[in-house]
Image 1 (spheres, rainbow, N blue to C red):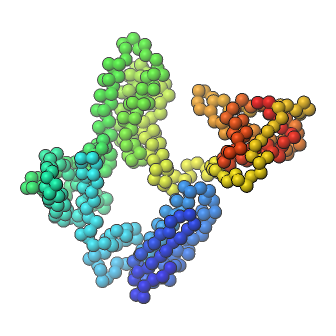
Image 2: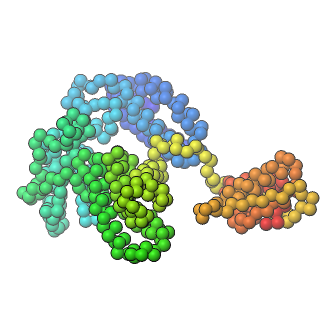
Image 3: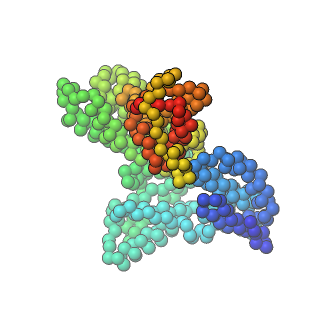
Length: 441
């Protein structure tokens, strides 16, 4: 750690083993001392968390939290706005992002291209400033397209205005309407301002509530149901499992498109609307009366409510894609299987060869990991049972004949090149129980 002589800026270098180092150049009104004390006060939490971090996912989450702490520490020491820069830092607060320290003219415009479409995100504190920034950006885009001898379909261009969260909180009826509606133009042609915009199949409204998108699902359901009516026969001779498979692979996938984004912000209105949408389909599938409740139809068809499935998609996206640390408490931390170095393991421990039968065995042990109710089986479950039986034989000094029907488990134990920690641990137990365990297969 070091700071400049005027103690206005702090340079912080973070280095962790197996993780790329990070440099921070942070602004703070006070010096290095307060910054250091704030960081040291919170290091105990990270030390405890580092001790239980068992894989790279937890380390990445730990690293992200540590970065947030460093950012917050620099701004935590700034108790009030700098008097010298009152206008420039009028929005200063504890959660200030580093990007906002830049000049207002930079970072106001963001663009994202999707095939032949272009989305622009432009900011402004007032309607006049928003209008100015947008028209400058649009003029620049039109100029670039002209230089490339390309034309822009202005009639298809649309704009949506999003108010800040603070402005919505203090406005009447949570409105996003500005006092003066800005005017956006390209080549002197006005762009239409709308309340919702459909981008890549997702409808985003100007209040970011996802209500407009969920309302579009109703029309999509009617279209899918009409196709279903043409496919199904009047005598309902189609197998029910085929109908359920069609729902899971076609209808549900179409309705839950983008649920990894909007599935975590559903309110009561959205849930009721999704119930109504799903009910239309269930009445067709279950062949029930119209007076049957939606919850009963969920039970009869064995299909969970649509909002629960949407929430599950959202959670999976947060955990597996975004690596969010907010959902680490959903399940207990478990030690995952991983590869190990096997070059230092003795050869007689790599290859396990058990006798086929022990005539004086005390017990016959049977292991079975067969699937239940047509669900999926798990080979490592049988390995766990074999490992437990071998460990028990050693601890009790008892001879056993071990019967297993899992070919994958037998081949894994016989393979000398397996790097799985779980498999090698089972080999170690069987090696210790070499004269106590036999396996006819």
